Image 1 (cartoon, one colour):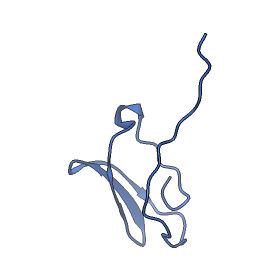
Image 2: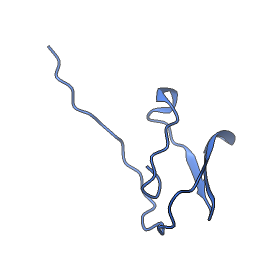
Image 3: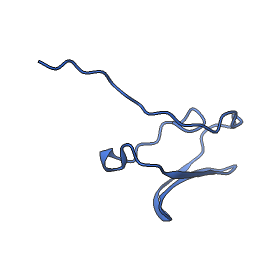
Amino acid sequence: MVVDQKIHIGRVHARKILDVTVDDTRIAIHDNGEPLRVVPRTTTQEITRIKSKAHTRQRKIG
């Protein structure tokens, strides 16, 4: 989630460190310089945190 906007890039990129560029009109996501996705920015909300966290889901085993 970037600036309260969900952006899907696929499970292939799970747990990878990606680069995110945000400007006034778009959000771009890159993996080692390779563009993965560029989406239009749908909010004018300011960026207040520059941190990331893993999205984890606890699953029952057994």
